[in-house]
Length: 343
Image 1 (cartoon, rainbow, N blue to C red):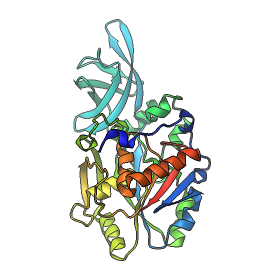
Image 2: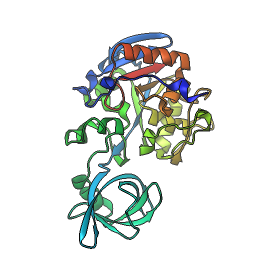
Image 3: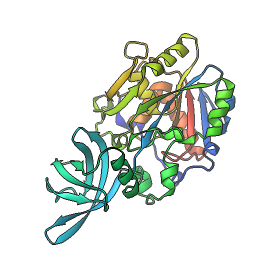
Image 4: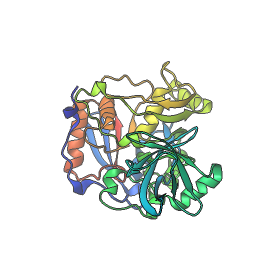
């Protein structure tokens, strides 16, 4: 299985830099078997069936992009930092520039927020912040920017609107540095309408990391080393999902993050409570344990997420799905349109 099998040409004009307004007005490509239908996200009320269970990732994106200053003697040097993941002793982070940063150095991001460089490697560093808990969250919210994906950041800078746009309406647990983007399409009225129809939902937590944007660099995709992300499936969530499977209902993750987490928790064939890192890599040949369908946006060429949807639907079928999306000018990536994939 070659990396080139998952490549396609994407015109830059199809990369969405802002979401649809309202959120549910985004287009939705329904791929049910070999049948393709052009709809909108609001039409999910007519597509989903009573007894279907949506799996929602309730992670909350933190404003992980920081601009600070480091004092070197009399000189002050600017530095850009992107937080990656929390550690016992601080935060792992990227820095521009990283080369000149020294262990022990203090970086000041605002009057309230600063950090000491505790460790440094060739690729990243560990920061020990002066604040913890709610104090840290408050100072970070004031000093930080939303960490827009690189393909959007290359086209425009983040602004205050992204603090709302790049967050789901059910975001609860802070820790992600990228949004579970399929979930960005949901509005309160749509969730209420689905609930009234008998479509139920279960929340899980997967803190999406910056690794989700890392390119696959090996030609034999089966040798790719997947990044790890922290997730949790509670005992109650596991019981709800298993009950839906037992009663013949469909389990439909909203987004690849929710899918990867519940598949990680279902090694035994049933979903079990889970808390910890997962580095599950799903590519064609994978046997799905609990997932019956998937709502997801349109993904990067040569990405692990394109491999995941190809595993669910089949490579040739997904090539037809993406060819249709390109021809019909669907908007791609995090702020783009969506699809509902039903094998």
